[in-house]
Image (cartoon, rainbow, N blue to C red; front, side):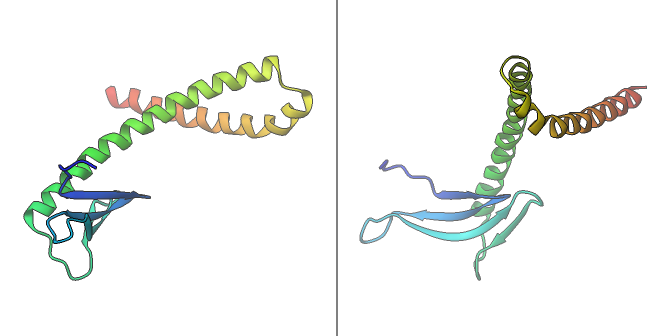
Length: 134
């Protein structure tokens, strides 16, 4: 393990992270991780763990991590959408070339409703953007 460990470790969880202070300056030279906070990315909340009082350095490190994490999550969202477009293309090719009648019967209604819902949302959002430009 690297001798240059970060001062903080962020254990990612749904909608946030647990924040630990990393300590290697102890007698046994073991890595100790002391939980200092819980982060909620949805509402931006930083809750100190237990009776802790977060230092200014703690808050700056946590806020920096939250800003970086928000960028990563936004990039992943867009990547997921690009993958969904690819998957829809693969689905169209499958339906046209390999799907059996029984397979199509299993998925056709769900796919049609999903695509109708998506089309409705996209058309409305595009109209809203066009109206906002005027």
